[in-house]
Length: 268
Image (cartoon, rainbow, N blue to C red; front, top):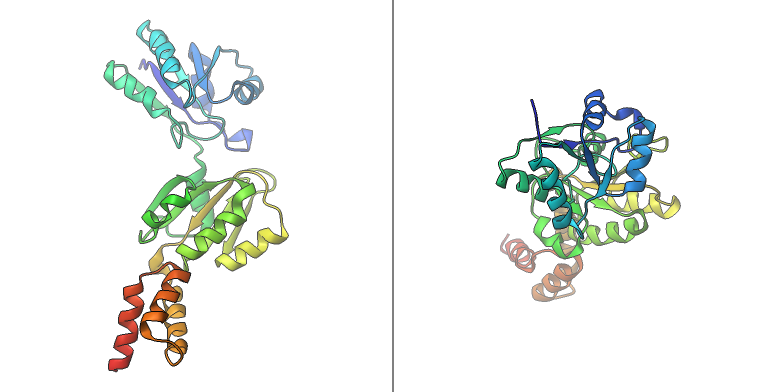
């Protein structure tokens, strides 16, 4: 079947992970849009594929879409790839798909590697319900705090310790896994408490692409138990109001929940 646009997954590390169908598709199209021509050229050279390459990113999306549409409306086939993995995941490729929809142009996907899914399988956390949160943004942490599912974040290795320390304040009690260099020689999955994982990267510099995963909140009530235990130890020294304010500020939890717990203990 003829398609105007092919969304082609590429390897995320090990070059042998590209599918035969992906190779055949890249050989058949008339032009390939990519994130970085230097990165994509290495992949295509290894496959002995020679095709025109055009950059597609956030900065030139509309101009690139206009070029792609010109090809597709003239019955030529277009492929879009990313530097690694499945296109459209945390990149603007969806705009090109929308352009196809608006112009009644057929498109399809050539599935393959996807680093968030690969990291999820390596983490050992529940896979039945999860949220891919994209690149880490500390301004949105409260948004994810009460989600009862596995959370997945992209992060730079240079910020991994800083980010884990920020997450620790919001996601107290959850287990954490950091997966890096997926499918490469130095692939690593570090899993445990926030303190365990932070200690590991204090002693071992993080290198390569990193993905942070957090276990579902319901998997552990450890944080709540720790906070209430601390509240019990402070109730003879401070007022309920002061205890609630201090613990709420430190652990980033509801002041009212702590206060209600203290009152219930008094009633007992």
